[in-house]
Image (cartoon, rainbow, N blue to C red; front, top):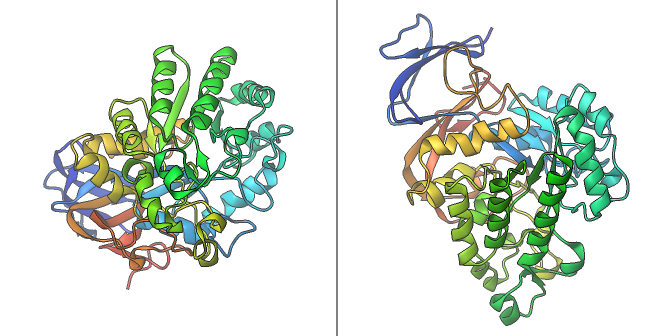
Length: 436
C-alpha cells in the first residue's frame, strides 16, 4: 500500500484552488477543506497542480548506449521535470524493431519506477528505410506499441511510408515522421540562410522539412491513416499542417521547447550545445511555431531529449553530435516562451504537455484529469521563482543542455507517479518514494 497524501490549497490549471487526497495510487478525493487521518500533508499554497506530464519524444539510449543514458537515469530526469510518462525512441542497439526489444524497454521502465516508459517501435528494420519492421508483433506484444518512428532517419521512400501508414490502421497506430529529405540535407550543419552563409556552414533548408510533411499528409489522406509530425520547426511547416487539418487529414504535430525559444543566432558562437536536428531556425520561425501551438495547429510539446557524452559535444562544431537534453528544463522553457508571453494558459499547458500526447500515443492511463478516481500521477509546480539553469538541475547521465547559465522561471516542487513521490519539496529522490 502506498503512502497517503493530503495536498492542501493547490491551484488547478483552471485557476480554482482545491485540496486533493491521494491514496492507494489514485486521487481519492478533490474538494475544499479536506482532511484525512494519518495522511502526509503537502502545503501546495501557490503551486499549480498539473496532470503528470507526458513526453512523446524521448531518447533513453538503452539498450546499447548506456554510457549516454539509461532507462533509469532518463526516467529520473523526466521526474525532475514533472513528467510521469515518456515514450522511448527506438534508436537503440539493437534497434527497437521487434517485440523482444520493446518488451525489454517496457520492463526496464517498470523496474526503475520513476515514470511509465512506453516504447516506440521502429518503422523499418534497423531504421534503414528498406523494409517494414514487425509492426504487428510489437503492437500485440506486452508493450502494446501504438507509435512507430524511424526517429532521426526519415522514412524517405514514399512507398515504404505508404505501406507503413496502411499497416498501422489495423490497430489504430500512428507513424511519427522525422521530416527531413536526406538529399536536400547532405552535410548540413545548421539552418540554411543568411547566418549559415556568413559562417560558412552547410545549410539545412526549411524546404527539406516542409516537402516531406506535404508528401506525408497527402499519403495519410490517401490511405486514411494517422500521421504525427515530429519536432516541426519552420513557418512553412506550420502552414502545411494547418492546411491539412482544415482538409480533415488525421495529422498531429509536435514542437520542442528549444524551437519555441532559441534561434539560429546562437550558432554564431560555434557552441555545439546549440547543434540539433532539425536545426535552430530563424526568429520568424520561432514566432510561427509559437502561434501554431497557441492556435492548435501544433498539438503538443515534446522534448526530443537527446543525451550525449561530453566528448560528443566538447569538440569542433562540424564533428559534434546533434541533440540536446531537455526533460528537466521543458516546463520552465514552455513557461518562459508561451505562458509568460500570454500565448497559453496553464490549462493549455496541461493539454499540450499531458492530455494530448497521451491521446496521440493511445495511453489511457496517462494524461488523465485531476479528478477523483484518476491515477495519482501529477506535478506541483511553482511558477514564481526565476533562477539560472545549472548543472545541478540535470539528473541524467549527460550535460548537453543549451540552457546552462540561462535564467528560466519556475520549479517543479513535487512529482507523484501513481501516488508515489519521485520529487518531494524540490528534491529529486534517489529511488521512488524514498525520502530522508
